[in-house]
Amino acid sequence: MISVVIPLYNKEKQIAHTLQSVFNQTFQDFEVVIVDDGSTDGSVSEVEKFSDSRIRLIHQVNAGVSDARNRGIEEAKSDLIAFLDADDEWKPEYLETQYQLSQKYPDCNVFACNYEFRDTEGKVTPTIIRKLPFTGEDGILSNYFEVASCSHPPICSISIMVRKSAIQEIGGFPTDVSHGEDLLTWANLAVRNEIAYTRQVCSIYCLKVDYGVNSKPVNIPQGNIVGERLETLLFDPSLGKRKKSLKKYIGRWYKIRASLFLRGGERKNAIVNIYRTIYYNPSEWRIYIYLVLWFLPVRIVNDLFKRIIG
Image (cartoon, rainbow, N blue to C red; front, top):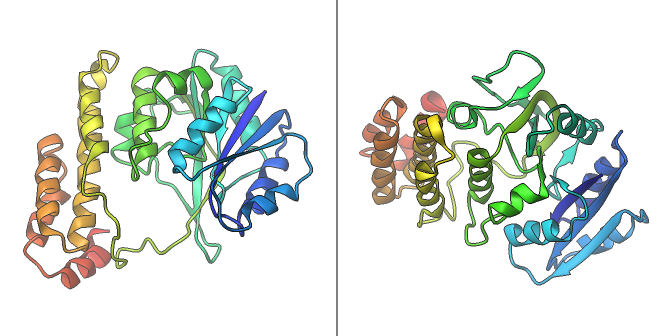
């Protein structure tokens, strides 16, 4: 009934726990498509310890997470595809909740639930999701970009189930993007499809590294493929009245990049993204603080992010 797609690359210490969370589901009508993206550790051996016939292990030369997910989509036997990363986990009711959404909202092609964060010490932090357009437990997320521009992302790579036809229609995950490829995918899906959403927290995003504001950003993409492609969505006829909220969402994307470049001391890139933020979302007052921060030393910038801005 559901194909679970897991891209796998060097997750020897986590994959067994992740897989066990799949087999602990209250909903058991599924297959697990694991795409080994050229792992060089013992990840494959850990998968092979599971004797469940529902597992299909596919090998490919390392090509990146998007390519691995796309391969899993191609191999999936079901029209309903649920994604899970190899170092995160689902609560036991995850698949059942997603399946019930698909039954309750049959006209939707995308189904998502809320999620929570868990750090390396086991501390759990809830997401902050604002401006949901319904008051009950679940409903149609008709204002995805509005919610995403003022909240944690309402959709992440472990809290979404899609119809195979819908994800293939947008070309799957972009393989030429190394940062933000998932956000771009959700945006493409949101423009062209209705999303059924539940407030219920059913998945756990496990934080792997220190994402604190004092950590220096590394490997920030100098190019901006994600931003440029989000901008092209403004001309999609399917967008309709959501153009204003998409502009705010694009502004948030540039604001995130501006903050990373500021904290990394890359002033030229920072100022470009500050001005892009102002262009798309001039009402975002924090971005004007960034203009002041641009003149300050990196050490002071990081300290202010920690103490005041967040």
